[in-house]
Amino acid sequence: MIAAIHPATAIAHPNIAFIKYWGNQDEALRLPLTGSISMNLDGLFTSTTISPDENLTTDSFWLDGVSQSGSALDRVINYLDQVRNLAEKEFYVRVESTNNFPAGAGIASSASAFAALAVAAASVFGLDMSEAQLSALARLGSGSASRSIPAGFVEWQPARTHNNSYARSIAPADHWGLIDVIAILNPGQKKTGSTEGHRLAQTSPLNVARVALVPERLERCRQAILERDFEGFAEVTETDSEHMHAVMRTSTPALVYQTSETLAILRQVKRWRDQGHAVCATVDAGPNVHVIALAAEREWLEKELNSIGTIKRLITCRPGSGARLLSESPG
Ligand code: PMV
Image 1 (cartoon, rainbow, N blue to C red):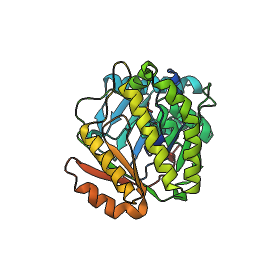
Image 2: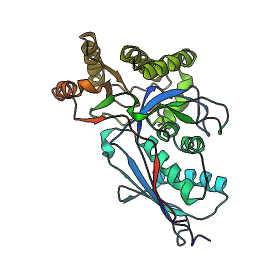
Image 3: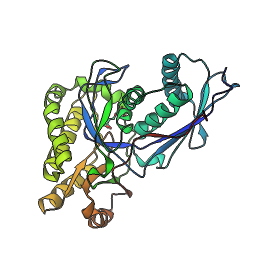
Image 4: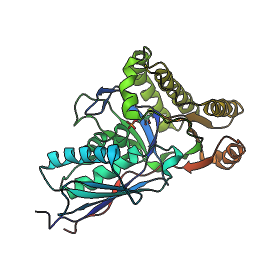
């Protein structure tokens, strides 16, 4: 009986990790090897509407107006199966998602996608959940999605069980005027997705060292954010990004996401910091460079980056809010 169930729409922002999530202790549950810290990205978002439909014999998934099939659809169906099991419900739904950022720009959308999907699905399937429970639910779709549920600056604690592995806000979005200027480069060859990448982390001999060093880095990064200490923040953020890419490069098979263009921009950002600018850089599972800076640097920084010929475009984001429901069943 689904007649009384109404559609729900949720939106969520992607996030950029300062201390990265790379590798799982439990692959199926996406329980990470380490904690991680990130900032939600205001201005970029996924909006997802879930509509129950009596005529459906399976779920359907539309992304930016295009009906999805194959692995993209399978991932959504597998996810909804988990939500249905939790809710003990058996009806199917139509999922319509739009991203306000271009698919080909190389900005990972799985965090905002699964955070919005989790919030909308919890509503449609009648799961009354706390923020922590929604974060854990989002994590089942994509680990970093757990961090797009709470607002602002967010930390995801490692844990051995589903219920305990969730993210929470360590500071609201207006706590610190950081910006993320995303320098979008040519994607080059097709990259290995992060789900496969997490599996490979443990094949790197450097992974054990990285995992051992992360707890101390989480502490330093959290403190630097709380104290608005840009120097301390920049140092720990860049080190963690370097260590993750060292693990990637020394995995079997090797994962090389950074291109020579990426490295040139990283070197330039270091030079600017040496000259006294409040800028640092971090890179995810792709070639793009996220230049993190104090907001006061924005005009100067965008001008400098715009003069670098290898950068296709810039997208600048401030700290963003958490995932939220826009509409739901009346009553
Ligand atoms: O949530 P996933 O499985 O897409 O993994 C995200 C991995 C990185 O973006 C490279 C790091 C992170 O913490 O966001």
